Image (cartoon, rainbow, N blue to C red; front, side, top):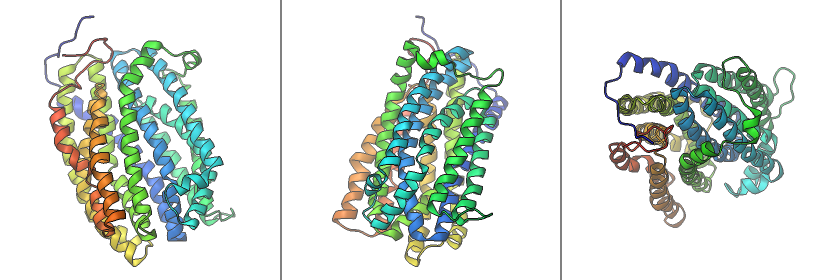
Length: 460
């Protein structure tokens, strides 16, 4: 097959800005709304007790693990869907959509079964505290159905984002989040005549919101001129697309597992340092995730923007967009970090923590502020730009080295052998994104990601 060559010509700045507004902002808002659910859970459960907050925070690590799998599936789906959409091949988008949905449903069903049948065993992975195990098991058993529902809705929302319906995807997700928050308040505290369910109430609120989200996704894709779920494609997949999907997605899945298990190890380490450390770490992570939403949206939306141009054969335009996105990621991370520092006093004043946990949280927020700059750059490049062109192996090797050869072993030695203070351990556990930066920059400049995946041969 004929090899493509990089086209000449510079992209229109106004076109780039329009793409940012129509893709990145809705996706960033969607990320913010999703993080807002965790924040509302923390705020409301924290009002019950610090132990309730800690139990649900540890139980939610199961959700975090599922999200790793979903992230790999959606990134892999986006890599192909964005390029085929840019090429105008909607039939190929529908075929890959059906295949990814089938895989995701099967795996998500396993999460639902495991949390329904074996919640105590899962909680023992994260803590040895009997009370936290008991309360976390209540939450996992009650929220079990949501894992299957989330697996379905996230693939639908991903396809909407990749077919120029990012605003609708954001709207569906946001309404679901608002419903979740409202039901949280009603069911946790027993408002409006409902029983006071406390931890179980947070779980039931999540399940109800996810049911609404899935139904809305079905109705939206049933409309005219939408990407459809073709039952024939769901039963029998396209061999070529299936092979291409796993060629690019397998390294992403490996990367997500390596990174995710490593990040889960951070929670395991913190979970054995006491309830104060767990509670402070939970709040710090929630605040960090809320503030980082635009950074993550930039990576997610930026990957779609670059992928559309690559699929359309506009390789020079894609390259220039990648350069602009990298510069924006630095600015976005710096602004996000500064904003986190500004709101830190407010966070400290509204959290219901012990004096020791409050001290931990104060310094954890400071460390999160500079962490966000590196996180913004890495999410935009590794998960966005690189994967848009099928360059997915780099992230796998990068995270394997930084997390499993450096940060996790060092953190475990400091926590369990040297028994250093909590804040020193937290500092070490937040170095992974910073350590990656030199390697990420060097790899970006090789431009291996400037490829049209709809063609059979790699770009040179």
